[in-house]
Image (cartoon, one colour):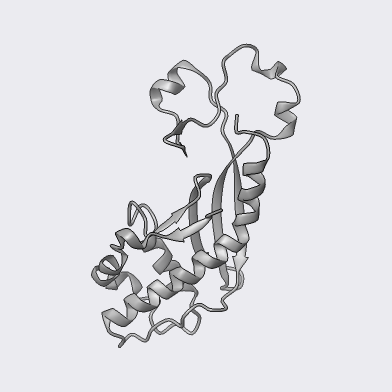
Length: 185
């Protein structure tokens, strides 16, 4: 199962990084690769690049990388579409014939219900928030401030590649379990 992957068929990422050099200014020359990797990730995903250079499983609503203020490490925040918790599916007495709806799907993707849909039926959409540290192993060092734009772009692509691998390892088993359990309501 694909969890996170790079969309090399429509690679506009390199061009975007070259055009966005100022956003890397604070991260260049940093002893830790965290800020550089987080900036590279932000440029590789929506809304900075839509569709993103990084693509993800249909249950992933968002994926962000941030520097942890406690220890300066790399933390990811991934929001996933989930089934309703067992406490709400054991009985439907709470429905009271109101026509509750879950996650709408459009061409196989989970989407927010439209204003029209919400005006007609109540919606209950369950999500899971994954917040976890990621290892720094394999992340390229932040380039020096004197690095060429091409070197910055190459390092950004390497950082995103490592993050895709690590996020897939972290979130893949969760997505597999969600997909093999009951259908989303």
